Image (tube, rainbow, N blue to C red; front, side, top):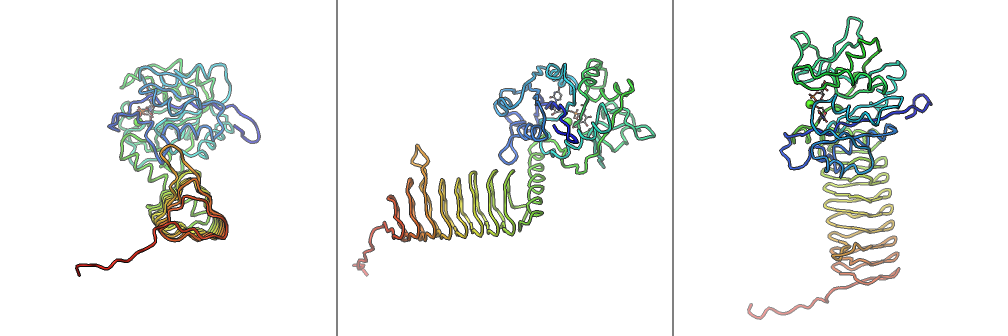
Length: 424
Ligand code: UD1
Ligand code: CA
């Protein structure tokens, strides 16, 4: 990771061995998803994004499921028995031994921590020459969390867990988020001194702070600006809460960049979506990760824009339109009730109501290619693979199975016959 133009070594350890019984799930809590991405994958990704040289996941309970999600994107340490947060980090020592630099500690179930917050934590740790830098927060109701004990000068002395806290300590509103940046060598030294002599009989990682203080090593803290970043997931209600927080955060970023969102709480824009200025997103629209939408488009209401879509400028994607892996040229309109999949459509086209691509033949996904200025009548089936040239007209109700050359009209439907009603 680069700090002030200098390359610094950073290893991130993710605690991912816990049980999560309150999810009432047959799956590991850590593989539950927010917007299509597993909680633990979100944490591993942010660890990579901050520029960690190595990421170590400490796995235990249902570890196969966690490993299945993270694959070989991280290293693994194994915690067979859950003997506390200190014990969890001890399992990762073989990845830390002999290394210099910083170790960031994250929880696999605290998935919406921002990259900028972690970079700020590590940067402050280096600049202030701190051996431990804690990410803390101020909570009106701090019950259940470790409390930050400071001296009169404001220096951090220790962290006291709720179950070990006295009356005075319980009144402290500054809490430990569980996210830290440590000097690797001093962390290893302190871990050796941790003992499970506390109310829970656990090896507390938090004891490292007092151990460092007793040794005269400088420690410090960053108080998080936005308390929602350190929220964890323990049950389904918290999973929904975090999804909502992330939704509002992502939507706010798009609005800041010039996108109009009519109803933020009913607009589901996943991670890494690009949207141009003056595009309007109507309610009940879902846009999946990686989608690119141009300027001045009108999207929704009730549109579903899935993976692989690249949409030009001044495009309309209207109600009950689902697009998957579709390229749409500028000024094309797909106003209502369509499914297009694995399709390229040029500019200035109009796709009539009810038009669908039949892209799946039961075995393969096939492509539909449509040129510029296409006018596709209502209720057309385009049976892929099929190619339509420029300036084509497709008659309403057609089932198109053959290519249509440029400047042609395609019509493929039974001619109407009218028969007199005999018994009237
Ligand atoms: C911990 C902190 C507390 C802090 C709180 C923030 C300690 C002793 N206390 O408390 O100061 O306010 O987090 O949420 O560190 N885990 C393992 N292996 C273990 C134990 C835990 O992987 O042996 C994982 C859990 O799955 C979880 C995380 O570590 O993701 C935190 O564990 P948890 O038991 O929730 O810690 P707390 O007691 O809440
Ligand atoms: Ca907890």
